[in-house]
Length: 430
Image (cartoon, rainbow, N blue to C red; front, top):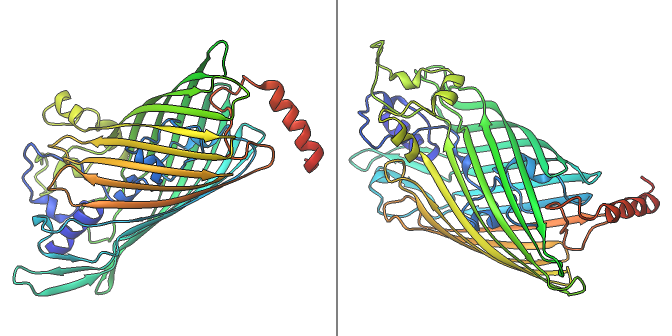
């Protein structure tokens, strides 16, 4: 069984019996289950190092991991995205010596949202993660078992724009199917919820149509109860609850209102922290299970801010950093080209992931094609190069052809919004 548990920790981040006998040193990495919920699938967002808690671009780019508030404020209509993310496992990783993992590891995701009354949005996000085929062998190279684990999640959300602030909530159904061991199936069905906020302020420059927008946002995601994959499990598994805080700066450059060329330059920063307990070797009740594994869900979430054995200094090490930026070039509001880049940094004692991403995007009349290439700066990381592909489609009633709008400054064109609404009422008899 130890092979199974170690495999699941690697593949899905699940707490297991293997942890009970482990002696934690300074490399105390918080463990969670169903960690695929933390993996962004929107190529454009990934190209910005995964910044998804604030509106950094002015075009539609949403996914399961986004702040739920970000969907509000777009022009009325339907927006859809589909993303496919194949993964490449780095060969020669000693942590995977006893595992043969196929190259069929991929993410598949879709997003659909309906915007109405210029302020509201409802929709869903769907995630499917296929781990491929996992063959576990012993130290002699003999194959023990073959598994085909897979996870999926379905989230519904609602968000609303209030002047210069947006609020959003979401709830998700999560299913994780790992394997069947004899008559016992390691399968879980659970739920989670998100809550998010973001705000913005815009300054317009005199004598031109150029502007500057400051965006800021906060979200709590994947909040929900602990669970067990099987009744025989001695400990609970933990959802990857996470806190995200971020801000972005967006410069829109258009010297003349009549100009057909528009340029947007943006840069952003995001910090996030898992709301999961920091591992430690404390076992005050001497029952053979570490104390941090026995906390209730609320205690794990709120206690995660002050439970690190080395105090505040170690808590700060558990914060991940995302830095990203890019430029959009738009012609006649019909053709768009964007180039984004970003870097993701994780403390060397808390996972040591260091990734760089590059993402070109092409959009023509509301149809965007996105691609991102991500590579690791850490030679010991499990992932090598990752190619991610996505398409976005926008269908709006009264909206610019590319789906751009003024959600960053909804009060700028009140009369225009009123006129468009009256025109829409006449055309569509709403």
